[in-house]
Structures are given as C-alpha cells and as structure tokens.
Length: 89
Image (cartoon, rainbow, N blue to C red):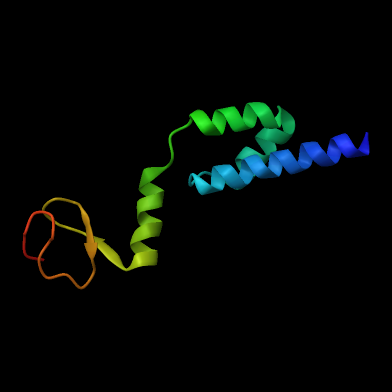
C-alpha cells in the first residue's frame, strides 16, 4: 500500500517536471496527476502545446536577446542590424 502511494507521488512529480519543461505550471499538473492519474496527467501534458510566449520571454532574458522591430525575430541585444531582415535597430 505504502509502495503504491510513493510510486503514485513520484509519477505525479515526474508529470509536473515534464510540464515545467514545456513551460507549464508544475503545481497544476502535479496536483491534476495526483487527483486523476499520472498516466492521464502525462497524456494531457503531452498533447498540450507548449507556452511559446513564456518560453520566448525566458529565452530573451537568459540569452540577452531582443525582438527585431521589423520582423519580430530574436536577435542579440547589441545588434545594430537584424540578421534576418537587415533592418537597422
């Protein structure tokens, strides 16, 4: 009985970590998996699209990037000309 509960908790935590890697909330997916089932939680997370807007914001901050005003592609913050559209920054 105890072993089953521990495995259920660990699998739910794995679903939460997988969700966090896709830029979703760890807590929401962890508790959803805990209540429903880790298998259902994993499938739901697998089928959902990652939060690209949040991932882009994290990447901009981590890699010191900015969006080009003309084409909206990510470029280095120090760039004077966009490497994608050649627009001056």
